[in-house]
Image (tube, rainbow over all chains, first blue to last red; front, side, top):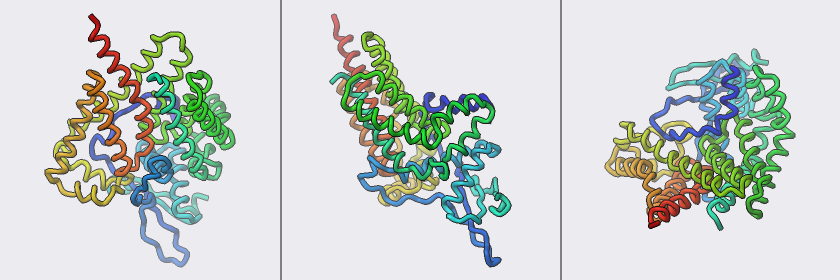
Length: 125
Length: 266
């Protein structure tokens, strides 16, 4: 990350941006699949889950939505700067976390088009 | 209780809830987690001194201590009044947590928490200078007004929002795709009702600056705002926004009362 961006990241939360739900956003999707063990390739599946209905107590304590928003933010940061080593590692860790397997591959789609595909985890490790 | 004290208590409550939530998310920020500091620290490779400094505060062990300190500071701020040290810890821990999550963990809610925490801290540091408190509350009130007005103006410029189709599109967007069934069915088609609700949201946000004119108008806008944020929680899951924004409301109410008092002076 460039030095200027580093300083911007430090002060980002102190410089509010209030442009919420401004327009239809570009849609980034993280998909993954387990690597075949018997030669049969699995289909790609979206990794970031949908939320169910929210209970009233989650108004006060809602880690599931909070981490899901953080995951989508990480994906958006990756789309904005795919060369960032941190973004790449974050996305890879996210995919591993959701697929719960050491052997997997993942890809990022932007508006339905593949913009990034990982090397297989065998190559990564 | 004064407006600034009320802001203190409410931001402390918001920070307490946020911190408990973060403790519940521990598996994500420990060294073996997705958001491990060992991964995130690469962002600062170009600035070794900064990286080293931040690592002191944000490695796994320090981050756990930071959350503990923030929780204690929140509880103390709820119990005590205008303690600059406590409010300073609240502000700086909130800032460091945002940095730990590459800018913000939860977008605008982190920003609003920081706006209020910074203002009440500065007010406590300069407690013998009422003018500073006035400016601090004014800053919170302006940011609060801007948060609605900017969001509303941007929506007003969007054709999808004016036509009432924007919300249906948001419900197809990952992250915002789990509204209650009745909300989804209400906005699925571009009906007159969907258009009415979209225009209602735009009108509420764009007209929010009117809240400065009179305390009664202000109270009416704030009541609508609370309903708006609670709905946003049930529809989108944005629970942190409810309490972060609530913490800013006493500042705007204070300023609307002050403007009225000044306008009635002979």
